[in-house]
Length: 262
Image (cartoon, rainbow, N blue to C red; front, top):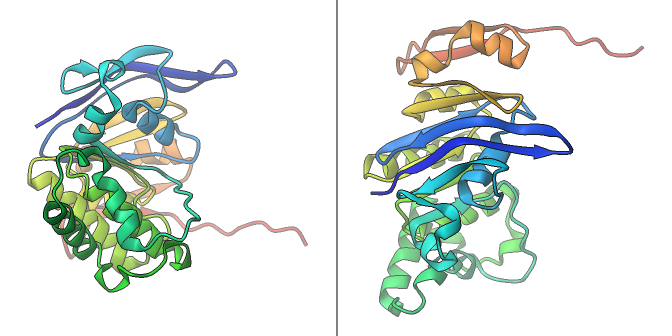
């Protein structure tokens, strides 16, 4: 199985470091969550890991080889990417959209293999009943699950997911993270950018905390979700308690009264 490594990577825009000398290793068999406040550099870091952005300094390696040395087709068989925003307005059905994930295997795929992979991905994301629907007619949450199914159908050893639970209801947030966790258990290296700290605590094997482009923690959930660290990073008082139902850490933000103009 493949390992994805960021070695002291930095990325600047207009002289400002969006990612500042971050080192990170995404190992097979782990679900690795990246968390942090808005503007922390989470998506920028993920785009460096995918190769969409080239670092100003440092290096990203996939399976021991610098990303720049991978041919696009070979990289697409090694890692799959769920972007934060997917724009698709053509009248493709859900099955057709999901099937796009088989493109890297077009030369070697058989119709039976492709159909089986698509069916499995639709079932995993609870979209089988919507297979014939036209993609633009879906709700935001249904489109997000279709996008994830397209990623799953690539069947790569590395998955990079940018806010995979965005727009999803409670049931499907849990479903998507359970799928990601199961893929990690099967030996894949999975990284997910998440805003929900408690989802990260519940499903991730390791959590990276970013703030202002810098790495503030990279550890097991109980160590990474330190209340003092989180309070500093989010500029809001956080309390961490034991989850009475599932065990593990549970992050509870303090409540505040908003000041509104009168």
